[in-house]
Length: 137
Image (tube, rainbow, N blue to C red; front, side, top):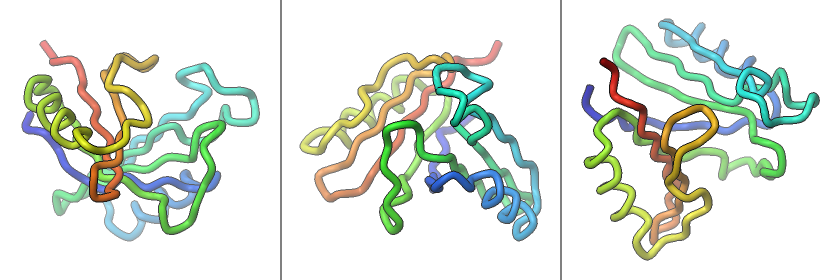
């Protein structure tokens, strides 16, 4: 699977409703995972969306989540560009270039859900998320 580039939206506790709305708008398959499913968040976040992904019949991919505990929500700054896939060398290369001269907020490392993930803001102020999934098979 080639790397995927798509918008990633952050919500202030209403990610489920927003992602369901976008499914009504665009159609497709919606996959939602809560903080409670992966553990690590308090009871108040158990039903909040840790990661949602809508894949539409037209080939659009839209991802979104509720802000995790400790992350302040700011309308207008509630997005990132997401790079994801299984091609570790390619995605690490993108990460190295995007984070060079920028600011790393989450180092690119293995996370509790099993993928390698990092967040940075590039030197032009654009927020990026890189997620490397284990190869299938």
